[in-house]
Image (cartoon, rainbow over all chains, first blue to last red; front, top):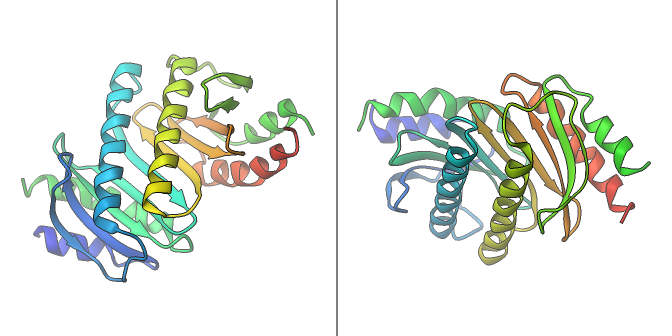
Length: 118
Length: 118
């Protein structure tokens, strides 16, 4: 299964706005956008990727173990991020009323599968 | 209801390790620790508070609306943060196998109540 198929699977949840496989350098490998995002999605993904990097560094210093998930909820968007490997992460942006529990589950299942694509 | 009572209510969930009302300046007003934390909790709260500040700034620039929640899941700890007002936030640290859904709910209910304490 390739990037596109995994991203489409991740987006098969109520409230999905966009899903992407991105590098921590801010460059997206592939993005699927089932709904028209109401924000500057590209800028958001780059910014949130930077925050996930920051969280990873903090986890290392604080010895809390590997970072599995970061989620950011705002009035207009709930964004879930999950590292795939040290260079790439999977991200799903959802509407605030979307099914976030299922979104988390879909990232948890698909991130390990995507490891094999690199 | 004071800080202590609210924090004890927030900790009434399976897997709660600690709950705190903290300033974005990194100074805790009050902290309740029902379980012995396996990490340097004080350093963690300060670090995560800094990350929440960063997220708030990003949300402002990206116009995604007010930040309601940040959650960071690592191998040893899942930490949920919720702003109370522009100066303070509520945080709940949990074991990875704790009831995070209920934890989120307890923060959502208690953060607005705590606004009245300031």
